[in-house]
Image (cartoon, rainbow, N blue to C red; front, side):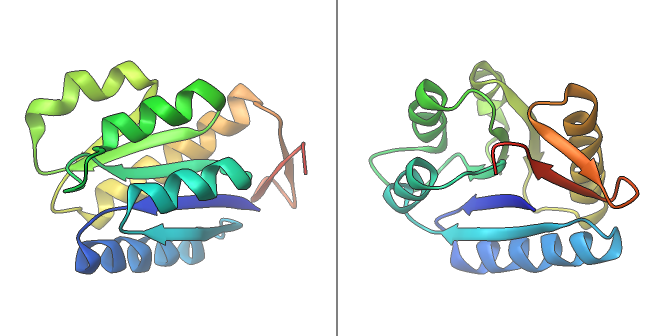
Length: 147
């Protein structure tokens, strides 16, 4: 099962993203869960350090001393394999965000079709890259080989 983590300081946006992702998982029969949906970067960093995380959705402007790029930079020092997707209404950060080996960059407000496209590309990339993922159940389920 893939483990997703979401970090956005805007609780309504975070809840909306969670619901949309869960719908995409169900619609496409993707074996995934949202392990953490946090509004604080510190919660996200703690969870990522203590758990196996496959995909991280990060808002860039977190209204904290750490922004999403700072969080990505800290995580990249210890985890080179987590897929990072940035979310933001601040398109001026797009070039800066990609230096953290970013998989995608989604402008806010999040459009469900665009998010679904990103998730399906991400699943395809995981299966092609074979970054310790194993396909089972007619290729509908990916599990981390480390588990």
